[in-house]
Image (cartoon, rainbow over all chains, first blue to last red; front, top):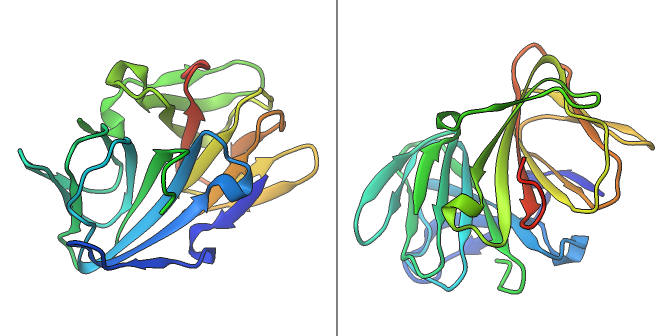
Length: 116
Length: 116
């Protein structure tokens, strides 16, 4: 069993592609014995964004705090605390912070792909 | 793609075993095309608790809001917003609300087991 606060994990700074002011943490992964799926927590600072990209695997996202948007080729959708997003594999996507506070979300991925 | 607020999903009331004042929602599951893992959101009201039980599959938990505890045979650990818990398969466990506000947490499970 593992019990932590997500902030106890050393964050990784993202600067690939269109990512900026973005930090991510693997909070539960292979190293913990989690064989099926991996939980990450991301913090987008003011003006921050994840990379606008696509990949074969899905995301299951839960927005913890702050305000942002999900951007796809088709639409831009506002997100706030309690919002849930299922992004299937192959769907191009980006999350952006549109507020002044941290935009914090949980993002779960299947095992067998890069954890972060 | 699916984008909702978790409260848009009809909740299921839990009254099995030692569960009480507990509500759960499947927010991303098989019906959405999620083939690998399933995201649920639980709300424990004041005095609420999940069933004290065990099963073969793991939980990956993220605490969204409120205050509670995780109870196992070995220990009782306080939880608050931002806490993360990995409960391996076979580990007996219960979550309890110890505050007056809702205790809200995300709980992810693998596919192939009951979603809720």
